[in-house]
Length: 325
Length: 293
Image (tube, rainbow over the protein chains, first blue to last red):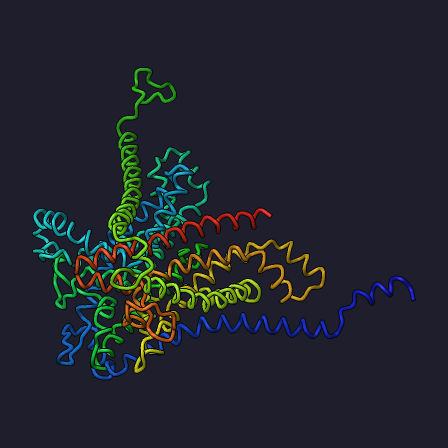
């Protein structure tokens, strides 16, 4: 037998080993595919369970639940209108105040901050998102609310009181306004870190070209940076909106759990998520629980819609879409 | 008419008129952006400062190691248990999903899976609480295990996306060398890809744990009725835990309870901040190392 033939035979994988490898490949693929399917199954199962839990309330109140504003557990009458209103007001406020600040932070980190400073401030801003909401809410209750009640609300009321949203205030500092401020703190790190990544992706030649034509820094931002990233920034804001809509704990700690529709931001109110957190553990009747599940259905639909639109808009960009925490 | 190219020698060297206005606007925008960053940092500093200042008074050895009313040991133990069980479920699943994304899915198959992970990541935690309540707790009793499932769902997309990013950085040459030697795919995944990416996967998991450890909303519905005196570890009954206890104390409005809640907040925040910062530094380092090799 020649030497080369021996070498070939020596290299040959034994049939047993080959079978084991084929089996191993299949097992690994199967496990990975199963895990991927599990992720999808969880979403479907969440939707099913929430809808199932809500079904008694859905069949009793129908779609009217969404706009009826009476919520009286003792009488078995439930309507989520005022909660939906509170959710919309707090989230809109948080976005209106938070998005410009967050975008400005993104611009600061990409265009203004020296490299070393940016590497410190960027992660610090993201750390804001790492503070648990229960602790932020506790801080809001004991530190922010008294401050807001003594200083910010009287000032806004006396100077801008002719606008209904800055109307008369409550005595405690627990208000829609305080809750909105907490939500603002929560959405800023999300929008800031995504928009920073977006701004970094703007080609330097475009910016240098504009600067070479004599544009000031602000004109480069207005003319180049913001227009090329605008849809991504909108997607970032939608992700922030999703966060603000769904925050239950911190809001429930500072919003004061009011049940009426109020035009003034300084009154108490409530949101869908916070109502679930506040009343679910103590809910006695099945209808009460089902109504809270119905709130969950509304929340889930709006939240999924915001996230879907965000990912649809943001698909063209390579940002990761998720915070690292 | 302007003669053009010969500048007026007497003209001032500082910009004037329109240019001056444009530069002022630009300067104002720069100041505003810097101020925005300063505001965000200030909020972080104020929150952490308050938690440290008020929490430090509450913390001593008894606070950490004894039960209610002198300490919060059972809550700490319970939170550790709940997080461990959650991570034990989420980590293998998350790594397998990441492997599916990098090894099998291709770019077209990866898109729906990534969208699914993003949607999971965007689910409000109170919704997960309702979900697990309906699935496991309704008409039965609360259990730490059901809370762990909710936290595992929170951790899952974070671990999967984090691991996927690291797995993608494993040098192609390593895989090609393994393929050239005729090694089967599952063997190269288990003996080449995963060990190379292990450090990054672990740090991604630590980040996810830090994020989930402070979640309150799901635990309120699944493991909030417990005995704060007893050191318990059985995950099939409701276990004391830090977030729901802080929440309960904050709702009660009792000054002594507030001190206790600040103490627990300090313990929780310092765990989360150190874990996040440490893991992020390690993750950046291992990513750098992988992409340079």
